[in-house]
Image (tube, rainbow, N blue to C red; front, top):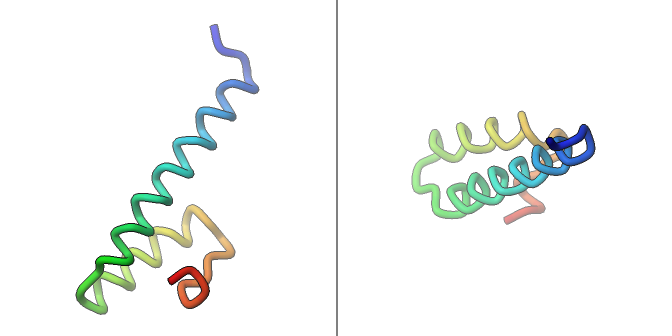
Amino acid sequence: MPNERHKEIRRRRQRRKRLGNLKAKLAEAKSVTERERLIDLIKRRQLFFNPDKDK
């Protein structure tokens, strides 16, 4: 039975994995609208995301 610490670690790993996938899609984004949508999704998960710095 996982305790609270293991639950938090699992949540953190899943968040990082999701962010990696979103950033990979952002790098391959072709249209401006798709890029803006992905930036919005990333900012929901990572508050201090700067798309210009993370290119």
